[in-house]
Amino acid sequence: MGRRSSIVPEHLETADFRGYEVRFSAEADDELTRVGPGTPCGDYLRRFWHPVAMTSEVGDLPLAIRILGEDLVLFRDGSDRFGLVHRRCPHRQASLEYGTCERQGIRCCYHGWHFDIDGTLLEAPGQPDAAQARLKAHVRLGAYPAFEYKGLVFAYMGPAQQRPEFPVYDTFELTGLDMVPYKAPFRCNWLQVLDAIVDPIHTSFLHSSISREQFSEGFGEVGQMDFFERGNWLLGCNTRRVGDNVWLRLNELVLPNFTQAGAAFAADGTARRYYGRSAFSRWVVPVDDENSLAIAWANFGERGDPPEWNTPEGPELIEQGEIFDRTYEQRQRFPADAEAVEGMGPITVHGNENLAPSDKGVAMMRRRLREQIRGVAKGQEPGRATDLALTPVPTYGGDTVLTMPRAGSGEESDALSRLAREFMEAQFEADGMPESRRVEFVIDRLQTLESEGLRNHDDA
Image (tube, rainbow, N blue to C red; front, top):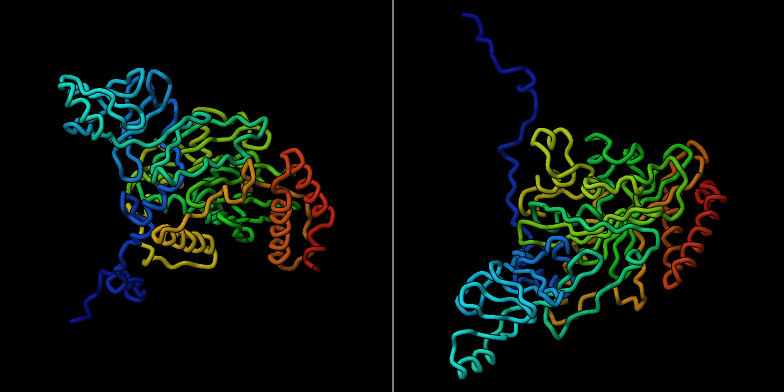
């Protein structure tokens, strides 16, 4: 008999498959990912102000929300004050999402117990006078301070005696900027969403060459990556060569979770742009261990994104390059940030990763977060943006495009890194200046660098 022929394709016989041997076995990094009450990361995050909703979401009815693993109710009383309270009434645990917003505070639907925005029991109807006095002295509804600012509601959920100053960043006060509140949900751990801001190289692939060009053609250039640490800031500069231009796009993280970056649609590297600012001012806020929210303003204007992108879909496109409500097939064909970070699973396991040199920013961020989390656990104060003692607090996220023709045919990476460093140093030197003077100072320095050309940097 002749030799029996195999129906298995020959290429399967010669390839080196290792699926059986390669197993993911590491455990999740609880220190950085668990955010509920009493967890190290949760205690750290509770030491900062966070946005918890958009003002437009809060009407005349209470709003049930979940933040940092806590079930809460956000409401606005008849005196136009915001309250953020534990969802369960301390009497019989009825949900206050069905309560009534009173002129002062909120009233439970079940037995009419009435609480002020700070959780003080104002009235317990149907109880004897003596019992009323005793209840008012001993019963409190858990409550957190909350206020509205430019269309977002901010809250502080940490120890009352350690409540910090609210940081007012310079981008909050730029003239000619239309700040549009938005909220974007992610079905995964907060750190997976935050990682992207210190991973600027992903824009060259996820938002360009792998998917369709979600922002602009220039994003497809990989560029030179440089990272900077300054106080509570982590900054990643992607310096791209686009024809005769050099595009410096700066991503910014202020620990623990405030992020800014260059414009999504105002720059593509083909036209000169001096000292553009961020497309968004954004916080990544944990809902719980496996869900998170980006709560932000999309910034439209001369130094942000073009006003024509100020549409109902505009903030979603700025957030991730695609709208969120898409079919599964659309998300497979044109993945964006949500698909990338949610595809890692509810809580990605860092021990199963293989970090590369381009992940330097991710490694820096995790190290700094771990240091701060452990410091708070030891009773130390966390680092804050307000530690600079400057008002408003200076920020750096944005983009600049300089006309700097290629000096030769050689490798430009060192020259591009030096250019990024000098750009950052100019911004740091301008800290504390009035905004008009800061703009003048930074642009003057940029124009000087531009006039010198990249050759001077390469020969330095």
